[in-house]
Amino acid sequence: MTSITIAAPDDWHVHLRDDHMLTAVAPFTANAFRYALVMPNLVPPITSTAMAEGYRARILAAAGPDARADFTPLMGLYLNDDLVIEDLMAGVAAGIVIAVKYYPAGATTNSEAGGASLIGYQGVLEAMAEAGIPLLVHAESTDPDIDIFDREAAFLDTELAPACDAVPGLTVTVEHLSTRAGLDFVAGRDGVGGSITPHHLTCDRSDVLANGLRPDLYCKPVINSRDERMALASAAMSGNPSFFIGTDSAPHPLSHKETGRAKPGIFNAPYALEVIAELFYENDALGQLEAFLSLNGPAHYGLAAAESTITLRREEPAEAPPEIVTIGDGVDVRIFGAEAAGCWTVS
Ligand code: NCD
Ligand code: ZN
Image 1 (tube, rainbow, N blue to C red):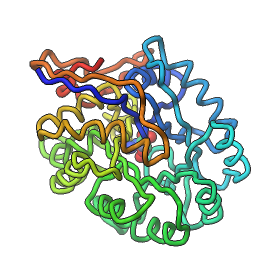
Image 2 (image 1 turned 120 degrees about the vertical axis):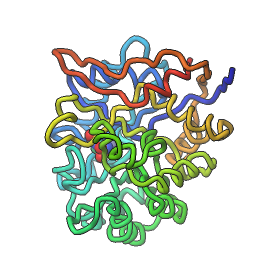
Image 3 (image 1 turned 90 degrees about the vertical axis):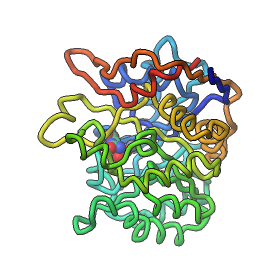
Image 4 (image 1 turned 180 degrees about the vertical axis):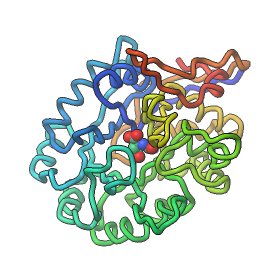
């Protein structure tokens, strides 16, 4: 039997939603991760410290009885014209807010309130650089003339590179990397890190499209080619400190996924660790698992790694665990990664 003990992992990008969905999904994250960097794309978006504080309290109330003792939600504010620099500074000083998230308007779920141009927020970005507040970026162009598989590269060229050049010293996370262009951007710049999801590490577009259309694998940025996926997996397993986990766990009711226009977002929090452990195991890279799950992320954000640990054990594949979680009143959500989860126990 293979067994590995590592510092407790963090999730540097997760959607916990609100209300019934929050109640149903928060325990999966709280049971598995120490820190959870929670995305602010609620409706309406979390644009103020007061909203973040209220949301953090609702998350803690929903974490459930099996939550890790050190589970801590870290809050980001949504960057748009409603964000007030003084309020951001006060939220950071009070330890409520740790980052700011930029969504290009229209790029993904609940991004309608996002920005038209990143450099349009140069004043905010300068204040953030000065105060050491990281910028989290959904790096995807919304230009309809650009092919959907090329939109990460396009955004990096036309929006993020000019912003980074204009505001030196800004700490940036390129979230949910999906291409070699994204990996190269991150690797080539100081102060820029990149998160990678379990699904971008283990699936490519043939999985989405080749054997019956899979709306459960539809997310933004879209899962890209096999070559891109292999480059992402190599980066994650390299130990390079610029790359770390962000699950982008993003639950949607099945009725919003298996319908005429599927919503983007994959719910992977329940089995995220198992999926990544299985990838590293298959590639003989378990020696780098702790760096990717537990060390590189905190270092990027200037935080200490967890003192607590988890142990992952690989067993003979057992019966696969559930693929559906019921949110109540007949609403189901599909879970990513059940097959890998059948091979591992986490304690
Ligand atoms: C996310 C969601 O559903 O909130 N969807 C997704 O496809 N990843 C938003 C996001 O991070 O893009
Ligand atoms: Zn996301």
